[in-house]
Length: 398
Image 1: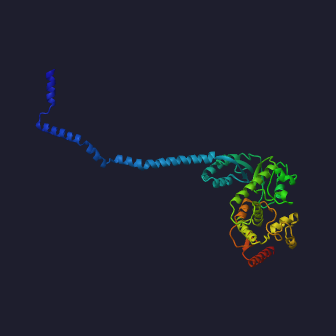
Image 2: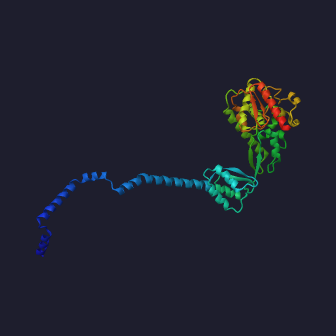
Image 3: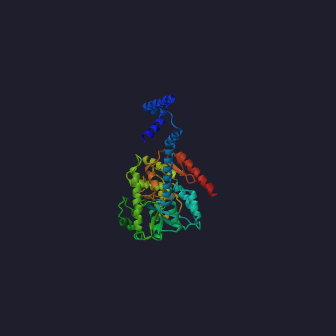
């Protein structure tokens, strides 16, 4: 057994000197490799394998791009879901559908209100409906509903027994009272005796003593309102009064300096005159500027709407010379300064104009016949503008 093992061992050893020499060279190279290994590893970093280089590029550029794309896609999905299916349900709002209005008409409305809304998705929804026309009426919707939720509510017909009350700016408090009395669905408690309105509402507004005091002219904010059936006139008037107080208080706090008003109430009076003088939003502040200039110079306002208001039911649509010459509490051709009370229900915009007039040298204005007014700095220019207006009206009547 021992002999055979030795024989095997001997046959495994090299006998050729060249082989021994070669083997020594190999061993020497192995030692050099072992000794120089850190240096070789350090040097190999300068020559990156193409596969590793490609992977590094993916990590540096593609991976962040994919992350940003995925994040943006998920955010877009959330927005789409929020807009089309969830919405933002805060306060309620009323949405009016007119007679004959279609889903396409409502869709156009939502495209303006909701930027994310897709017209394609909207048309897809509409195509699933058996009919295109909606039921006319007032609908109670969330403040910012999703498109599909809003469409679902609208397709079911009017969902709330609401009463629409539209108060037009420039109308009077008496017009408001009549509107409430003739509107079906409201509960009348205090309008049967208008003289008790002020005390019934607990209103302590500062108004001059006189025949118009109980009417609280100017103190109700004109707008379009929706009330539940059975709402009382007292509740409605109180809401409109509080809204107007808020409008006046906010404008007074942010008013222009050096105005000829001693109290907010005087500004309310001026706003009511501005409201009656023009229906153009861009003219309100300029007309306010003219009236402010006249008050500062001690000039009378000489505005026709105040005469008309003072005439009351006697006004037949035409102001005569006798009406101008007749001295009344509201005839600003005959009295100095402002009339004793407002002459209409002024809008928030008119109140803002009264307290923020534009800087102008104009002291006069007259109608041009097309809905606007011609403003003049001098009486001579104003008289010419009046002649031009009369000529226009004469041509219209021919």
